[in-house]
Image 1: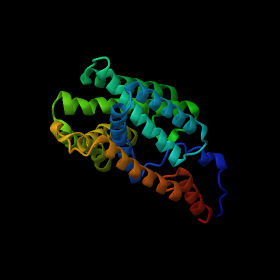
Image 2: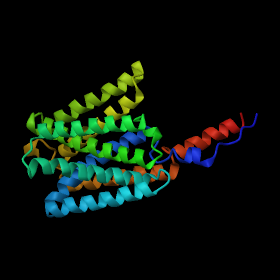
Image 3: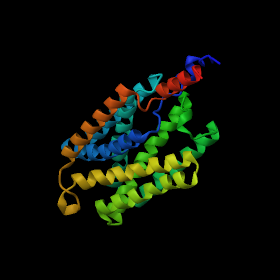
Image 4: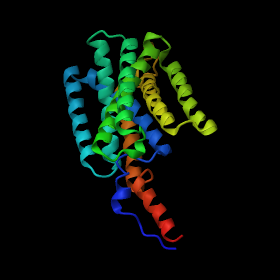
Length: 268
């Protein structure tokens, strides 16, 4: 029996965010590391106030483009994520450096802010699934939550590496182990997919930040010593290459997957 395709809007509206595939997590980890190294490098290379202001303006431009687009576009989406990573790092660092707020306090603050956003988002929209991001309000909740997770991750990474004196490499092992827990819980016990996604999403931030710091910071403070500038450049090259690949192949596109599904149904 031949089935008619559903209206174009029914599958096009699903494409404001990417499909969660392996490359999603790879690019997410790269952008978190990029945000850490780029923020540290720009603050040191130029005036900190100019760096923070500039990153905020670039974030505003990236989010404006993301909200204006009607479908998921890899370059626009990941540019917004990268700028959230940069500005989120600076926001967490400003609280500590400029206002003297400890990493423990800022970690608790950003964790509370994130949980409050989750609670409000769930109450207003009835779901925290990123598969349902097809209205402006849900998209606003999504990006506010993303910003909170990045700021939280920055503070948590600095908390373990500096306040608790675990160092960058030990922090990598710690967060790498923690991020494996929700993944195993999902694969082995089919724990709620939405909870697993957000737990993993939060933990990629301190993991990526710890990797960037370990690679970029001097040996005297526990790093490898490649420098934040070089680490930023290399990460950017990898991000551009993978996002370019996604843009060409649509491997993480809901639109492509939905159209493929419709094609199968059409001839079934």
